[in-house]
Length: 345
Image (tube, rainbow, N blue to C red; front, side):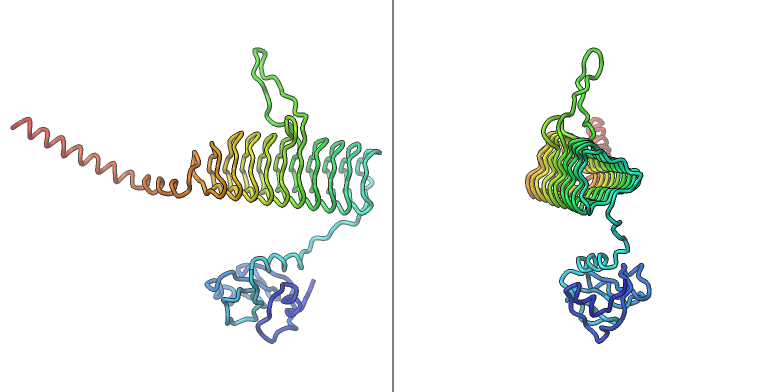
């Protein structure tokens, strides 16, 4: 795709600073990767020199940037504008609707005429595939699964029976929705399996990364709220309820029956214990271990997780530990010498 610089500025809701409306834009990229014909962006004026030194045709910039050695597209939020520009130049194309001849589709399944089902995908009994859905090769859609409009299911995704997936959801390759949770009861004969007869509900506009597992509930439903975004390699256990517009970064584990309210952010490799309640807007730092409930709006870190400010003070104190130990040893020597002197007297 090609577009004039002036048209690009209009598409981004920005103002072009310069008389270069007719310049042809062939793409967008970061200032450390941009090539001839492409546009880049900066979020802060301190990054402007690097963008100016790049081969970029023009720079998407905030209003705080008033002069540059290249044409500027002035916008309120450069990163959001950059994201919209990437969408304009997205080279990926939707497949043509239809069901590939090698796909296995149950007779009772209902597939919308504008949906696409790829090679060797499997669609179970009474499954419903909505308008504009894309089911890529080797995906497995179980019996009685419902998938809303314009949802994308990438290759090798498995959706177990009786799960519900909303509209405009994206499930990346290798993700599993609806596997049994870890439910076993110890008995003299060994571990007795607890059947998981519940379901999973993924609401609208959720994106789930590659190789994520969302376990089905024992009874009731495991729920991922609308607009939530989940990175790769995350585990969401049985009966967890994730609120709306949460952000969960890679390698997070959320144990059974925990509740995340709306807008929670969990950084990479953090863990939430079972039956914990995390309040709306709380932020959990990287590698934190949540062993108790978290109030709304709190920022926590460390293991066990506590107030982020308290954790920072503890880490600062730990850095001084060698110095403090030396001080203690020195005081012990002085006391020992003083005691020795007193005994000799």
